[in-house]
Image 1 (cartoon, rainbow over the protein chains, first blue to last red):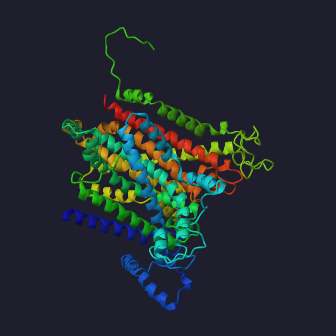
Image 2: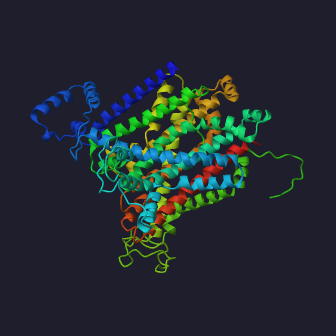
Length: 343
Length: 297
């Protein structure tokens, strides 16, 4: 146990080191001056005093520069954006929670729909229910997410007018940001019309969440189905039947728990896909998240912002994936390393 | 062919024939295969099939609805877009671009990925663990993020987005190849080859590679659908193919401006994209279950 924990901490630290090194080198790879890309300040805007200090660090060799860079990263001094001049650390802190909020609701929704459907399809393997669910799931994971989002906007916002077109909440509400998660913020705030703000935020959430969740749901459905089918074909299930347990007992006592094991690594594997989809959907619905922010940064050639955003998102992904891997290793002693789940 | 044999000889189908027999029984997958062939034909012969030049603007015919609409005409079967370009021709050229480029990318990624994966699988010690760790960390980063970084360095454009997608596809091939090679290396026929004095390259080229074909085809179908999705998504986000190009994602983006009055300009290119990915996934799924069932016989 301690050994495993130590190995994972080691792995996380090495990966984070590589990512920080990469983000440092990006400043040199991007067009323009490395110093400008690192600080976000134009050289002619710097005061004489600052300039000489920063120049001093830049004139040193690259390892000393990197050391300074990491020091600045930890003190929360990530530079400023070329366009807005706002500090990047605070920008990322504001936009990242919005993305996490959207993705986690989509993930939750997919689990609530995908898991039960996967069980139903597997229990009725080679029957009509199974085949029809499987065909629908094929449609679901073939659909390009941006096209789905556009069609949903066309139908539900423009034609039917049920849901708002874009944004996170109506401009009429002023929600103080505490956690960065809008639904929690509304509940924590002391607005007079809390309830209508909550409903408005929910209505803004529905379309983006559903567009992201469609693809993830079908993936979860397919992996659950395959896992349950394989579990039910294994010998311990046969042994359980031989002991005279009823099908329900067999499923509840032996089937469900064993079938759920391969689903956790799936969560880790789906996370990058989920985030990619979330970034695309964000830019369609003008959701103020990190994906939208990064894509805007590309259009405006805001290199410090791309560097900071890339670092933040990849650190998030690495920590999330590694923690899931760790949980799997600790809960399932059979598994020496996390294997990839089959669809 | 002769149906009944005069001789008592028993015919044993090869593994490939078994796979095809299994695949044939899955009618939906066969339909997918035909659809896939259809897109392949469009990709190869598109200048012959397209009725108009995809970038020719007919200023008199702006936003004509498709032929099945009461206001549509038969000269533009899928209607025209906001600049009076024939949508059918644009979609045919768009299929060529999106599908052809994705196919090319998958082949390149497959060659590189299999090479590196074989290296990781055949080697032991530091080299192998270095390759594995690099691989796992690349795989954890979302494709779009890799693409954004590469495009930020090189600038937006179709070729640069192709680099990004190829780079994002390679780890999957590497992963699969590495696992497969590891698995095969522990089998007895490899041991026999080793005892015969075969070198590592010889073992890989003559013993492992021939067995890897099916796994690679299945993996390639997965990669193809991912690559189509990515290339059109980048086109849609203005990071890949740029506006006048008839790439399907870029066409969708152009359609947004007039989506409310001319919904067919986003429905039809998106539908083509959807069909393309469905056909690939159908073939991939059918192939996978055919391979799985074949082993049961």
